[in-house]
Image 1 (tube, one colour):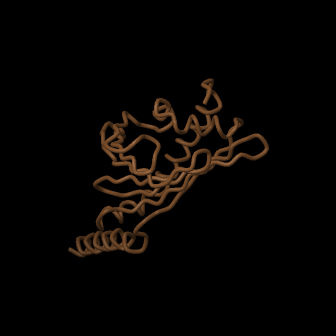
Image 2: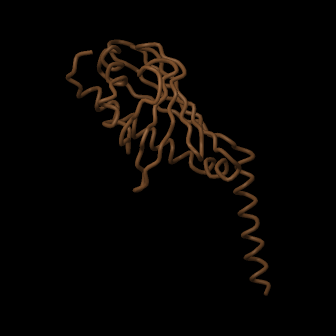
Image 3: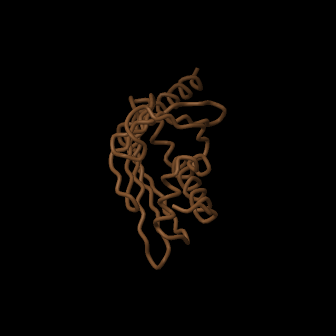
Length: 175
């Protein structure tokens, strides 16, 4: 009987810690940076080319414009992504754009919302591209879960940015 009390006590403690993490860390922020050996106009052209996005964002299946004009503030798209054999849909809204400098957007889905920003600057003939994300869970369980997923989200962003670097540096299209 004592062992059962200890197991239940430990289980209760783990639940309290899990929920507490959602209170302490309701959102997580992470980012990544790459340097590509291409001029900023070409790098930005690749970033903006919807036909190339699936080459650098892992799991991207398709993008559907819902409203607005592509690559303009206010454009809304449904983004279909496959992860672990499951497909999910995110609503993307472009919130700011300055060609060759910045694109900012929000992504919304049932479990979480994300603010995303990508910037580019040219230096010494190369282009420095940085991404920054802030992800917030929708609801207490989701916030708690997100607080434990920062490492996985960071790793995914690093992989996507590494893929972007490769796609830009192998690009032969003229923008």
